Length: 197
Image: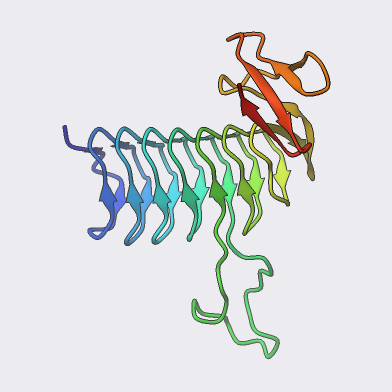
């Protein structure tokens, strides 16, 4: 089963798109990017040069993923979300000359397996989003997010922990947390992460 690419999409001939993936109207996929199998690239979204996207990823309408981002399997990126790549953005050098692509070093966002980034969220360059983390809609993420962490706001702050289903975990004791939807239990490790037990 080959990829389904709408005629209005702009897909560079060097981009690789896996079987079963769909690229919708007006999406742009730049040179040397790689998209895994069974992905959805939404209408009007942008995938920068060399971006690496795993399998079963949904990138919703108008999301912008700038290079050199790495998106692992099973990730959700909501409508209008932006993954940036310039820590110190400037249009020109101090002498007023327009910068070109050789005059700065892009830093990509890394999104761990199963993480979800809500609609209109912005993730700053160089940030790592841990596996199965959940970024609330409209949040501005300026620092790394631990696995299974729920962060919201501007700047985004930790508000709790979520399971693989995306449901907020309920604390059972000092170290054990429960997913009320699936019944799975998690062990809190070193105040920075959750481990399925």
